[in-house]
Length: 252
Image (cartoon, rainbow, N blue to C red; front, side):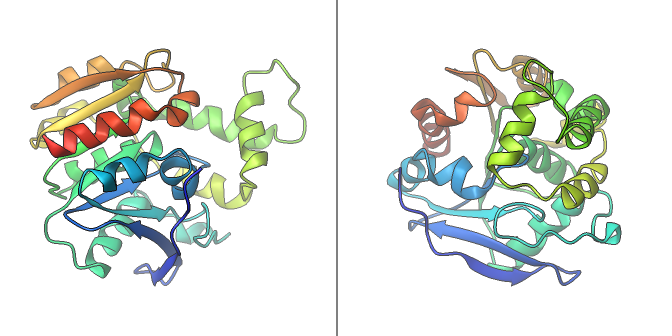
């Protein structure tokens, strides 16, 4: 396990306290984590951030609202549609980034793709653990996660929500805040993907089908390549190959 940098704090435009961590020197790379996870688990624990900094980059890794050390307000008004895109834009402004790369895994990939479609312009974009259905067919995934929250205390081993619930328990997820956040997500019209014109990497576990077909997503983007790493949606995050593929893409 690698050490985790000291958190930095800032306030989003609605006043919600948010946290990010950073390491390394060089061109900045923003790393966005997955649902129910946080920057420490997704990017620092298994060495991905270190692989990227070793390649000569400065990594900036926020905890989304309702995740990690960032605030998890219970007021539904704190979760308007695409709030995570607003929070990302606020972080970019706060850290005064002009030129940067953007990397996301799962929810982070979804947020990154929608942010670029909405107007952000990173130099390069890497989407991990994401397929075309994870963007265009979010309603089905949303229903699954909301059901997992509802079955938090009643699910039994073997139920389809069991593993998600165990991860939620491990991460001590605030279920009220998480449900509000999930409700803020909307589907992405595949036509919007044509706006993602910068070089992109779609990287996914060989046995990961949680968000649909990653090769189909790569094919739908104007300038994307696909890279396969070992693992499922959950286990691919522990594989060194994930960070290696991202670092190689950013350095190309």
